[in-house]
Length: 308
Image 1: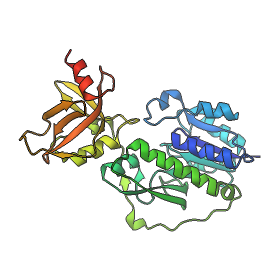
Image 2: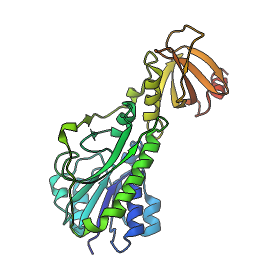
Image 3: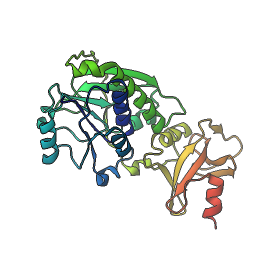
Image 4: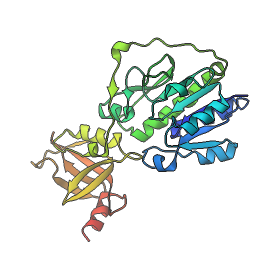
């Protein structure tokens, strides 16, 4: 039986495979394609999936590019009915798209047509989006295009981080596989009409985009921290020539009524955190931080170590 091949390298892909194994054990997974360790280590939310393959006796193939000759030859030899892709940033070449009998299905962590492109979860948090979603679609030669096959929606709260939003996406993807895989495997597809007038596109982000500008409003800074906390590179600020990373901060922001200070000024440091003046006169309370030389901890311990 040709089966279903997964091309994935993240925890969301893990959830899709787990749903497949639980609800459709009769549908073979002859292969999982994942990034090489050398490539994967540079991906913020990389999941090697070794344990899942070992526990379920699934063959793993690692590559730098899904379009490389050896990978294409391996896929052509297996000739699966479907290839399902999740969290894979490389565009599929036309040869790859033509290999599976019923085509390639992509999972994208946004409610397409909103949020096409890169780093869409990070951007959604940065922009303060409240309603978000996850999409499965028929893959074509264009990024995040093709007929939409399944969508689900959820809320992004003021306490959500990139990690917790991806957990919601993983749950949404798990449910989508449970609901749809049998039909897709039997070449039964139904598409959802989408409004292209609402389309939006996000660009890639770099670690340098995490620099905190304390002249911005406190809520905007808080969104930045939530958007790129672990497993991403993290928001940071510069102090005494060093880069300080901020991993967690309070959502309940306090208006500074007592002190007139420049944005970026340290106002108070205690067991509750480090309070820093922001551009709208609110204080941002930092709860977890680190540097290249000091491991992640609360700010009070951090500065005890820093000042030694």
